[in-house]
Length: 404
Figure 1 (tube, rainbow, N blue to C red):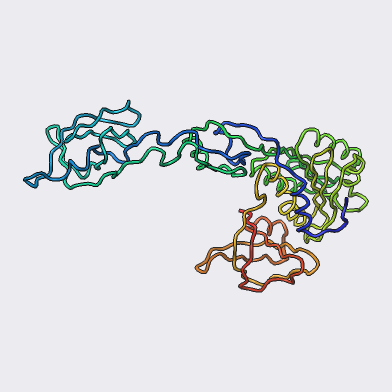
Figure 2 (figure 1 turned 180 degrees about the vertical axis):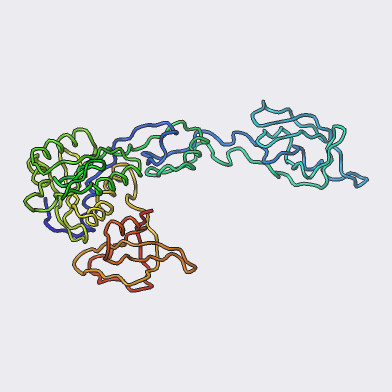
């Protein structure tokens, strides 16, 4: 059912409640960076698989380093050498030592590793210059990962570090939600793709390229396109988009003017709208619905309205398709550098720049003058002033969505 004008919070809840992550797939670890896990993961093996040395030095028994009756440091016969990856070492006899390199398996019978800077070696014997404690410089079996112990919960975004941990824990692949394939369609006879000759009255598709860059930055596969103001062309392009892609984002033509044809084309195709227009400034002309079970996000054409609607509505929906939980931009607490005005009747969006100072992170809101595109290009963050609030005062602590 369509609500002709709903609030921003309600609209976002509507989007997220209607969307489910894409069906999981298994990918090798060298291809899963940035993907979200589709299931809980536990370790398959212990890492390290045996007790190993943390230092280059000598494996021995701590008790054998206690000086003898003459109070002189004992000299221990060196009976072997162990390096990382060698076959299991021989058992250590009392009052002997084995040369060991970092990562080498601890010989049976040894209970400590003495680093090489604390020994003297001569004539096949090693003399420890001071007594040592049991367990020193030993990395115990399973200290990094232990078979059967949970590693990550479903929804975890896989970073390079977490992928390394999965590999150490015995995994060769991970079951993840794929990144959505997104059709991005800019509309308007005046809109051109970069590289085409620019004639009078035309403009380049900056909105299209901005949205495309955001999606690509987050690993999504995109298919950007420009369609003129012809209903039949829009109908054909939208029908093809929902056949071939997982989601559709349109840019421009979202309002109710004579040339705002996107909603008309979608209606002709039989889409199911959930909202069209909301109390969000800029961005009130945005809409959301489904066409052949594929989500469609209608974005207005004005650059600030277009970007705000994309960042706070469409992007969380696309991230939900990819399994993000919670979906959306990362947030940070910041101190406000100047007052910002809101509106009691709608959610107001304010771009600005973040600065780290001795007093913490500061958000400097942009003033509404000069080039819109330059302001958006410089922005580090986006502040939403919720409905019912008339604004914030200088020094207020606010939550900022980070754009960089």
